[in-house]
Image (cartoon, rainbow, N blue to C red; front, top):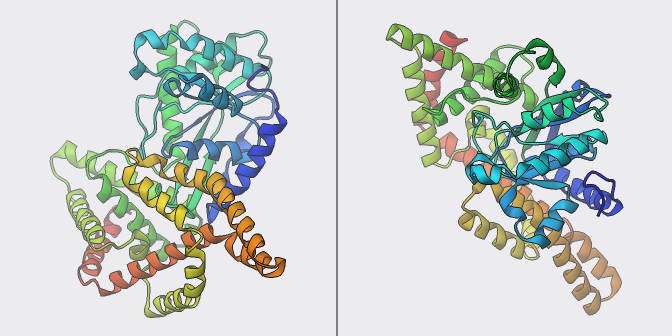
Length: 443
């Protein structure tokens, strides 16, 4: 068996196919900061982790270059599964939760990681050590990434300077397909700089300094909510106030990345006001904003109104156009729904049975990439066996995009119903007017 980082034609073919499927599951993907990646460096990517395997796929297809990853060690216990994971360029790593004894087994992984960097292949490790589908980081970050970086920096066979590249991965929705995705690559953090600046510092203290710096850089690249208290309220308030700012100023919030930056800025500003208020034992704006945000969140979730409806404030013309589109596409939706039924049933079961909701889109991706091609081939065999090739070919052409079209049609109907509910709701507009008054106070 060769090295994990070696080029493999079968892996490249699967990666090409998976990339086509993965990109098709997002309406838009925004990638920023690729110019920050140095050409002559041993690169360790440090992305945030919110969405199971989807984050790893995002890193693979960010620039299409070969990368090696680590994953939690317990999924490597079966030797057959371990071989498959190794083929897909995954290595095991034990986390603190796996116990001190198991952590000692990471030495082999660290050595292989350094060997990957020797060969000029980027290495990817999620420094949070696990995933959480929230707009915040799990801190403190795990130290494995810094152990690898320091080990590589001291290795005489690693000819290029070693750097950690912070990466922020954002999704318009953690649990839905065909949303928007943003990947932002930050500035490189060179390990040699720390060794020169802190020559007398012991390794553990040096890793703590590096961890604090990486955490700060990662927070800059995502929509980071500074605290967990009033989490839902702060999310909704930040999104609504960012949309209000966009409507009042030419701030360039049109792209998903810019919108997330605006939301993050407002969330931090609200948090700062809260901290300042705590120091003087009074809060001129924060309690009112949070109370109103909680009321908005509770009302919209109870009435099944999407946040996009609140942000866009749909008019009658907009609802009429969506209604016309939904009615016009209804016959096609019925035709697409029949062959897509097995995929739809599996999707519903996954939503109900999966304990870790971060893997819902991972499950859907596997369904699109593996299950649907098998089903389509079966449908094609049946069609060509039972009718002449012309109508069979036409039927296959209609069936081929069925799952994608059904998901998109479902999204259209979901937004339409949400817009209608928002237009009929009498309470939300009053709450939004109250938020608008606070808007001028914090911005």
